[in-house]
Structures are given as C-alpha cells and as structure tokens.
Image 1 (cartoon, rainbow, N blue to C red):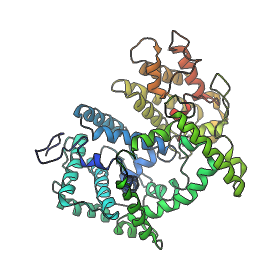
Image 2 (image 1 turned 135 degrees about the vertical axis):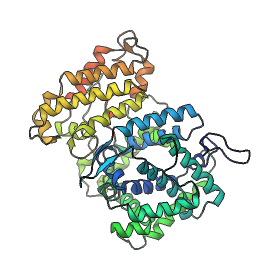
Image 3 (image 1 turned 90 degrees about the horizontal axis):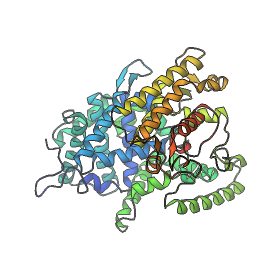
Image 4 (image 1 turned 45 degrees about the vertical axis):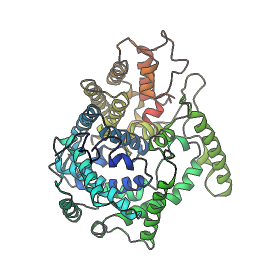
Length: 489
C-alpha cells in the first residue's frame, strides 16, 4: 500500500496541500463532522473508557481542540520526517493509557483494532458531511480520500491492515462495528448531553460569561440535536437516543448552511487562525491581541447589557479569576477554584494520576519534547502524584477529593513538586544556558517576557522559575504566565 507523499502523475498525493484532507481542513462543515466522529469514537467501549479516564475534553475542550488540530496538521503534512515524529509522539502518549472501564473490561489505547476505528470514524464522517450538505463525493474522490486515511493509520501502526484494503469492503466493516460493538457509553452521553450544555468559554469570551451562557443555552441543545440526528440509525436505536421532531431537517439545514462557505473568497476562513485567536489570553503580546482586546471589550459590554435584560444573576459577570496584583501577575483564589481549574484536569471531580499525566502531556506538547526528556517529565509528575496520594488520600480510595485537598493544602509543596519544577526548567532551557531566554519562554508560555521576569541577564533564572512554579502549583496564588498553560479551557 502506498503511504508516501507522492502519487502517480494523474493522482493527488496522499499527504500535503494537494490531499483531499487539506481541501477540507478549513471547511466549516468539518466542525460538525468532527463532533459526530468524536461521538462515534466515544461510543466504542475501549475509546469511551480511555476518554473518561484520561482525556481533558470536558474541563479543557478548547485546549484539546487546539492540540488535536495541530497533531492532524503534522500527520497530514507533506514532510515525512514531521509525520514520523508526530506518529512517535502519539504512540508514546497512547502507550501510557490503559486500564479498565466501569464494568471491569480492560482497555488499551494502543489496541490496533480500536485505533483503526478512530480513523474509520474520521473518514466516514467526512463522507457523511458532504452527503448531508448536498455535495456528495464522487467515487474517485472517496477512493483517494480513503487511501489518505489508511496511510494515516499506517503511519501510526506500521501498516493499515486493520482497515479493509478496498473501499467497497469498508462500508460492511463500518456497519458491522456500528451494529455489534458500539454502546451507549458514558463518554458518548457526556459529549451529547453535558459537554455542549456546560462548555466553558474560550479565552476570547471568558470576560463575558453572561453572553456566553446565553449563547450556549441556545446553541448547545441545537448542536446536540444535530449530532444525534446525523448518527447512524442502528446506533441511535441501540443507544436509545431520542428522535426529536424536526431534528433531521435541522441537521441538513446546518450542514447545507455550513457548505455555503465554499462561495466565500479563498482564504476568508482559516481554521488555524480562528483557533489561535480563540486561545489568545489577556495580556498576550501576539499582534492579534489588540483586535482580541477590542472584541473582548465589546463582548463584555454586550454581556452587561444582556444581564440587565435577563434574570441571570449579576455574579455571572464577575471576573472569572481573582485580580492579579500589579507587577507580579499574582493574586488569590480559593482552594475550591484551584482544585477545579488547575488540579482536576479531567473534570471528574477528583485528583488522581490521569490529572497529573494530563499536565505532563500538555507541557510536553507545548515544549515539543522528544525522548528521554518527555519521560523524565512524566516520571517527575508520577513521583509528585505518589507524594500527593500519601499526604492527601485520607480515605485510601486511590484518589484525592476536593475536600481532602482543601483540608491539607500545604502538603502540596513537597520535594517531588520541586523536582517537577526543576525538570520542567531543564526541558524548557533547550540550550542548557542556565536561564530561560525569550524564545524558550515563548515556547512554553506562548507570550513574551513580563518585565519583572527578565532579571538575570535578560533571562528567567532557575531559582525564580522553580519558585514561581511551586508557588502556583502548591497554593492559592494565581500566576499570569501559568494560568493559560494549565487552567484555561
């Protein structure tokens, strides 16, 4: 099977800007298709269990979206070296995810058949989005796109043998999995009935909670209804999903409306730029930050006006985070806020190893770490988790509740946390110069130095870095640089 970047003279490459995947990347319909594919993935018992135990998609969906977006860009890019490196990173990430679901059934994120199903949902959902929007793919285009997704699987697993070689055999494979293996998993229910209704605001809108809550109250149920209506009928029946009157018409209207974007001038919709702007935090030195600041100000005024016109409580427009003191970027937050916003990365209400693993994963992703630095960071977080468990898990259930945390906050600042900070400093200090320079700082925090940090020959010294990280991770102080890394949605 061909897995390279070039095809025959009359055939588009499997990867790169001429691939069918690239043609869909900035297509607004792809957002609807990705939600649908994610539900089909989560409905698989192994994928659903892995998502519930390890994923940050509930508490930090926008961060998860951004990382998934960047990963797919790398995997479908034209450079085979970048693709191989990203595949190796994804395999290391998935190799750390295994366990058992609520019924005691084991799961393993490296299971080849399960990984093939994830790729299958992406391909089938892309085909479905075209059909539902009135622009069905012709047979040759489907064949070409199917080859791209099989090549994607081959880049991960070494071969694509878990997916049928021929497209006409794929459809019977897909129908068989839908009818015989998918379940009404908790992860699928969370996506359909909890995520949309409780979706946290992206950084761009976090200063206008009333406006966000009002929009979410309308759009959330609509997205849920559209997604349910687009799922295969056999799965809807087996899962007992509701058949809402008018939902099929609403679904087709949404896909058709999104498909009208093809009439816009080329370049008007850029998915990467949209995701980056949504992720920009207040105070960023990104050139787009002025536009974002102006939008935030307008949205905050609109939110205040909406609050006057609705019975929503006035507290919704309070600042979502404590005010930082001038010059230090530090303020105060309650133990409950810190637990929810920073420690509970998976959003399940408890602190356990997957939460700290998610922190290590996010930091490794930002720093683009390879081995052995990535494993060193994970090992440091694992040692911190053992220290936290010994100090805070008073009832011995293997995890730490918000109440257990609040009762023993000072115990967080132990030797293992200091070691995490030291390892993170060493991973960030790429050149080994003993300080974090401006470029290294931007890699981790995605913004420029704050004036008070560039004190040691224009760099961020080891002791200052370790002190700031430990203060943030062990207490109730906010930190302007670290909040966007681990606390933002």
